[in-house]
Image 1 (cartoon, rainbow, N blue to C red):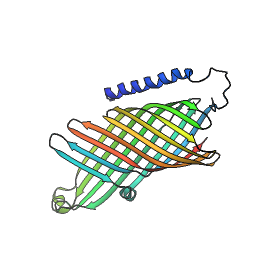
Image 2: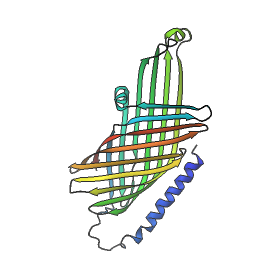
Image 3: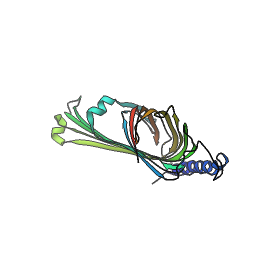
Image 4: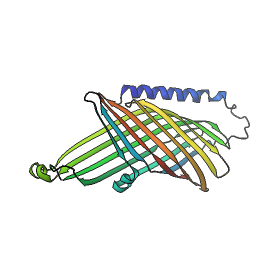
Length: 268
């Protein structure tokens, strides 16, 4: 069930988005006017993106009732060493000035290690994570050197952890024991995206958004520099930072993913 704050934030962000698009006529010439720098194409365009995000994970958990706090850091080396699979894909679907910019990162990590105590001899752990950014955008500026988009949409977070301990003095008697937990969070987001052309092949871009809903706050920023390799292929490198602050009664959870990103884009 979608949290009321998520629904309110979603309605508000789309209200701002629609207000901006409704007022765009004040900034752009009337239909039929000659504009030399306009490059908007009324046809349908589609870009497919493979987002090689080399992210590290940092989770902070605290409980105000019992004064408990813990921080779990999973570095890039740990992720690559325990990665079962990853799906980092995105797209850019456009028609005229309106577009949709889905971006999905899903992964599963798993590993095993001996335990530090004798009650159990072995611990098996797995972590599944999914983030889905689903913003729509309206292009308010589009010329040969600069494109600027206003965005509004939603972001979804899903994390599931599974830990099993076995063996040892206690495990050999009662058998394996385990625990499982999960987090789901829908949030409305709003933001901007800008791309500046340096020359006919090289460009810089920045993306930023912020939102709320089932999370107290979530925000994201990404900066890239890219180069056109072929007529329909672009490669870019940059840095991406994504964070969630969630409250569950007396428990507060902060989840952050950050690291370099390599994006390959195919234009159709």
